[in-house]
Length: 272
Image 1: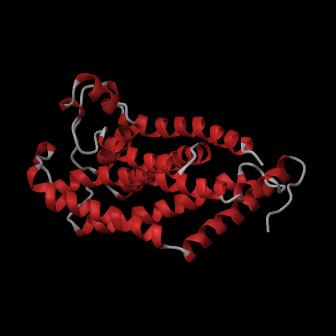
Image 2 (image 1 turned 180 degrees about the vertical axis):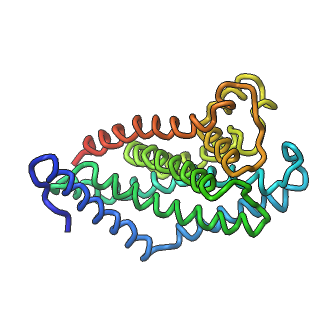
Image 3 (image 1 turned 90 degrees about the vertical axis):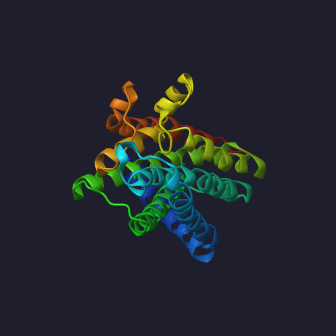
């Protein structure tokens, strides 16, 4: 049961924690009852890796002549986080359309709690997704040459990106109406992901497009992950390419600072 907030900063924080925990459990319970979409998402991610490694890998040249799986997998790790935007948006939109959001708003629940609960649940699923991707990566021959600390830092950057994208997905789910719009979000994940350094060197793109790809938040995470894991990458002379580790932190923080308040505002603005 959701608790009534207690006056005072400490009481409000405790109530937010309790409410968020309850709503996280609610999301996990829904997944246990209906695991189909999540299993399909995991299966798609694995299939995506297998297609690239065994269908396209022989035709693509790796920078520096390294292993194709070593080059590919950091991009795949980040892409799977991007694919989660549509899942978050769909889940939030489903709650809104079924009237669940209105019921939460009529209760003494912090406006942050449903969103935090969704964020925590989606981050847990992202962790499971990343674990499945790591097993798949090892199976196709990927290896990391960095130490344990660098590997953990790389995976942390990937999950940091997913945390930021949760708030983007939450805002979209509260803003867009209709299944067509949500399908459009999932469709746009592909061009946004490919317009990065995940699979193609930005230097090979037309000038303005290469600049966009260089500054794509996904490029920063992919480039920083490759550096930390000791996997081959494109490099580059632009400021963004030379400071990917810094941008891999700044971009998710900036996205969170923008879209978390926007999501809370949209939640509060929902009509009863």
